Image 1 (cartoon, rainbow, N blue to C red):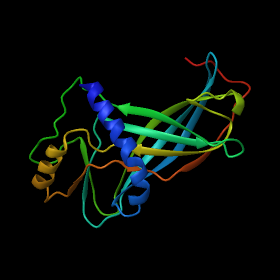
Image 2 (cartoon, one colour):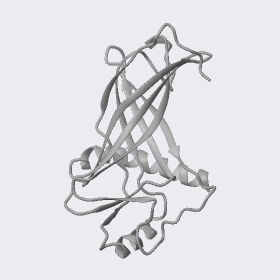
Image 3 (spheres, rainbow, N blue to C red):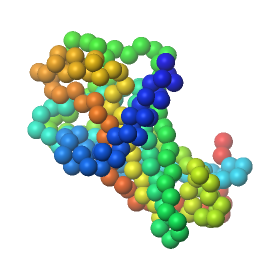
Image 4 (cartoon, one colour):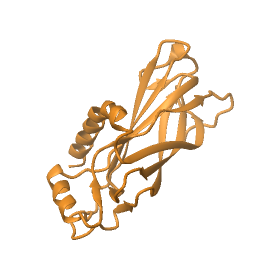
Length: 203
């Protein structure tokens, strides 16, 4: 079951990410990302860059939004680099999925796994993204980045159950707000990856 939902969600994020670039300014739920911490460690062949990202969801619309923020969320981080050499893109997949305990989403009113955002309201959460850092551009593999300037863009799921259930809950919860179920993507965020000489081993 976990594999099915993970595969479905990642396909959904991949299919919608390009469209999000067009729709982002029109949709009421906005996502921004901020790097609030970073750590380098040395692996067997690559250094690893871990970035702690603060994700901020903001309701830019005129009615309340109900947003799922439970334990079953999926993230796709696109890191683009190579401004001085051949441009490249590395996709990092991340998830917060735990099917060990049942989650109540089908209820008379939104429960504790949802947040309700009034117009202008925000909700914050954090994720950690890790990516390999090569010594130089020539030694970069398909899943690693080279030192230098990059941009980072996060796409996040906001729903993991069926579309049918989402429509039922939307109708049931109309008085509380609009249940948001489409993925959201942040604007690209610039950052600099620096390979440090003295780097502790990864543990």
